[in-house]
Amino acid sequence: MVAEIINGKDLAQQIKDNMKNEVTELSKKGLVPHLTVVLVGNDPASRSYVNGKKKASAATGISSEIIELPESTSEKELLDTISTLNNSSAVHGILVQLPLPEHIAEQKVIEHIDPKKDVDGFHPVNIGRMMAGKDTFLPCTPFGIVTMLKSKNIPIAGQHVVIIGRSNIVGKPVGQLLLNESATVTYCHSKTKDLKKFTKMADILIVAIGKANVISADFIKPGAAVIDVGVNRLDNGSLTGDVEFEEAKEVASYITPVPKGVGPMTITMLLQNTIKAAKGLKLQ
Ligand code: NAP
Image: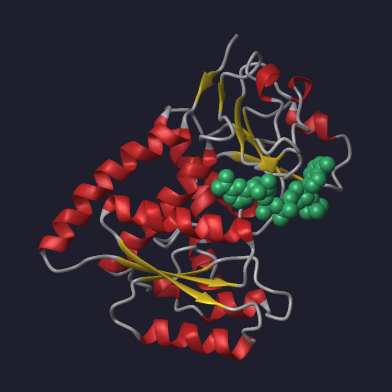
């Protein structure tokens, strides 16, 4: 079997084309969705992610701005900046690029963002709403993964999903979203004994570890759908996932590549959340 490749870049483009039409319609009614991204410090990877978000926003007609703050910004100054954005009717979505410098408490910052503008979906109110299956801003990477599975009509209900990784931004929420879709979900992590025993049972295997090519074909049940979330930069500068792509694609039924896999979907879901914020999420 040779797996069908789920090209996240192409799917993201299709979704962005549709969003562009929606943004045009909203703009005609005087509502231009606006995203404000706050970048603290000079981390090159963060800067590149933020620029990617700005570029993608522009391509869909969403207005965006980047507020750049120096590394020395105090926690209070950052919280004050967020308060101003919370109170501005011109700002629909707020995203604080993570990670933050060590002297700033990340969770405190996340919790300071108005949940109605929390387009990353990291605020505890939105996490709680997601767990309860209520309308909310879904965290972008998990939302993108579910959208990729659905785009190929890959069955979810009743399927066994195994996730490697339990971070708050990928592993945990993607499991919750798929549980909401009636999957049977198993979480694995660095303390899991006999990882392969679990991964070999997966109808859908989601890998979010952050270590290059650690999941080889012998971890995969023949015919499984494999979603590789990992993004790892090799010494030669190229990007690779957590899954040994060339051999895994000989075993899986579907597989996402890196690059052009989950990454482009994440940004697209952020834009979708920004449109949702502009239209006004009702928290009730
Ligand atoms: P993270 O917070 O570092 O979490 C990594 C998880 O992997 C942890 O739960 C860890 O277990 C587990 N783990 C580490 N080594 C393992 C091993 N040998 N066997 C089994 N589990 C292991 O990372 P993250 O933020 O979730 O990101 C994961 C990867 O996805 C990174 O490469 C990141 O760059 C990428 N990513 C991509 C996108 C995208 O849009 N494409 C978005 C977000 C993240 P413990 O909990 O026990 O430590």
